[in-house]
Image (cartoon, rainbow, N blue to C red):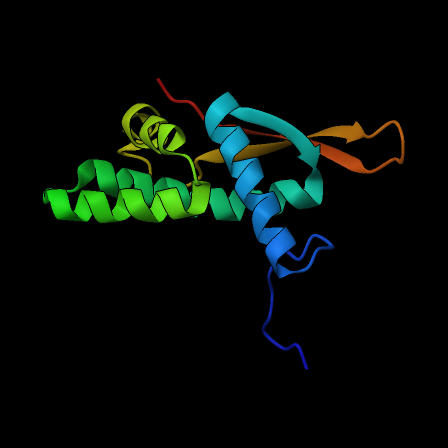
Length: 127
């Protein structure tokens, strides 16, 4: 029985799903917005918001050891030191006072080839 196993499966097995979420998260950090299917957007939103929370905690960390530990956790999820630095040093400071909801999903209509529902997922920028 699969009771209480509510995760976004996005039609992939475990390692492929993790790789997809990792790649989509990397693209969000690099470009601040991406267009993907609605299912993938909802899945990556959950994944990315947890990374963003870790980045904010790393930025607020008083102890250097805690910051390094959080950066390593983010690195484990993203796999690129340059993107970790960008997330923690450039993106996270904009969200220090925000309690969540770092991304927004906007539906953009069906994909031309197969009619899949497409969405734009982007960082919510407050200035």
